[in-house]
Image (cartoon, rainbow, N blue to C red; front, top):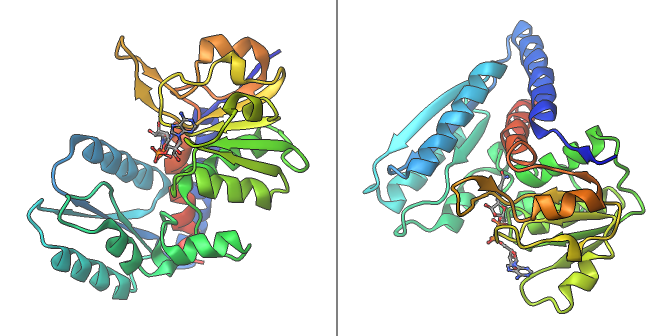
Length: 278
Ligand code: NAD
């Protein structure tokens, strides 16, 4: 029997736990506040920012929205971040990416103090993860670990293959699986014999950014498949990096798209916000 990993349900569980935690913090007079900065009018960014605001409302986190014009200079944006760094009432700072081309994203990420870096993108947060120290972890890969753990899937000792090596998904994903004592391989666009490597996986995490690229020829019978990708197919239907219909009969567990990894990213962002007060 294939287990369909329900990211919607698991993310709700996490949000409900956080809601109770935030209520308890409030009785101690502690208020969790997240500052969200959006620059310009990118429609996808507006949707993401709005979803984050709704999640904050649900959990009881105060969300402070800063919608800045597309024409803002890099210096003005950095100055705004510095102000929020200094503001004791703000626990977490998030700058919605992508930013307009005239602004250096790396500079922006580095300006947020690591103590408020709830996206987990600051080099110090990434460094801490790689040497097993405390720090914020990038939300999507952290969500994948929660999906596995809360579905009762053991990671320790398993062959884990991550396809993709981006800074926000693939690399932190591999480090987290390693932290959970998986035996980890990272595959990427220059990997030779990708199918052979993918077929070694007990747990295959796909973050390749190519719609339905991974079909059953990449899958070991009975593997667990986690699909991080999000795309629209030729019929405008949401799909992942995995060809779900082709793969589903060969796996022991799989995340659907939508309703798998997607909802976990915001849940883990909320988790990071609540941790930021501790
Ligand atoms: P990216 O484009 O930055 O990275 C893709 C990676 O895949 C690269 O490291 C590249 O080396 C590798 N790759 C590309 N072609 C390959 C090939 N033919 N064979 C092997 N490796 C190949 O993408 P990303 O930001 O890591 O995102 C990956 C996917 O996850 C995208 O579909 C994105 O939309 C999705 N995503 C989802 C969430 C979520 O919340 N669910 C969050 C972030 C990203």
